Image (cartoon, rainbow, N blue to C red; front, side, top):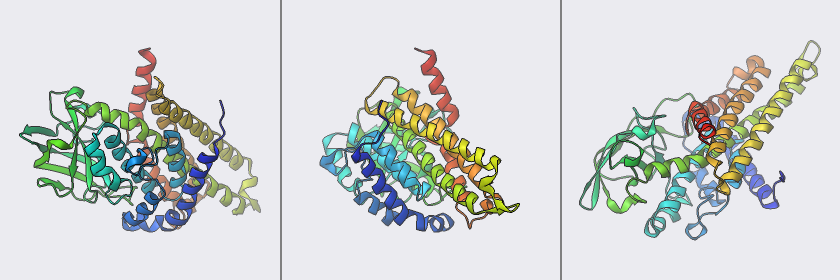
Length: 379
């Protein structure tokens, strides 16, 4: 039970942290205010190996572990939560192709995905299928050498900009067993996109519907076999939940550091507010809860790397705790700033808006509790 990072892991973290400080943080407020999707900056991250973190090396991936990825996303989110989270989504989509695709599919898409010459989106959620993902209705009907897709996906990050859409569609009967995974490329006839959603946070990435109207996709784009889609989606979400939890932890750490610096500087009643026990206790609780969430997340990542049977349960535990804790730590950091925390002159309100959605996506935290309790009761 060695909690120390290896020399390589420390190097991954430091590299990502330097990139976040130099390439993300100086621009994060502008990207948020003007809804700028920083593709060129993300390609710089890809040049460091961050676009194919757990993709195999023969197609340009870094072939790192889930724990390595958690460290990288914690560090990247210190610069821009929203952009770090998008890089996580891109990694998840690429991993699905690398893990479940055939060799032709891997060689077709992954060399350009690992450089982010091509950008990927993950398409599971639908207007009427959120937490109940297995009830999705987007149909893919076989017609010779093609599938004909009809339906729509909702809340898709990168929609309209991404080049590759890894989509869960219904090829069979109702329920999880009728879901398949298929790649749809931008420019395919019948593929269109909705208007960009006006969101509370995550404004450095576009979010919109992905719409299929008699969209003809080659059968060769099927990932795995028919009926494998839901299993592929759930396996992808184990890692996605770790990454989004790591993004919450990294953002919360920056918020805590900002609050500590502010508390030492801010004078009230003739002294720094850091000298008040109420402030000290608040900071102590924030640091303690954040460290507990970080340790659980790293344990869950280790279990996923080792393919331990309780890995999915621990990924759900880690996601639930890290995202709830991350939001609460950022909220308390804003509170320490008082009225200044509510102003856009300070980063706290942006941090708060960005981490809030982490309690909803990659499976709501209520669904995390369903997963955890199901695993507990079915032992």
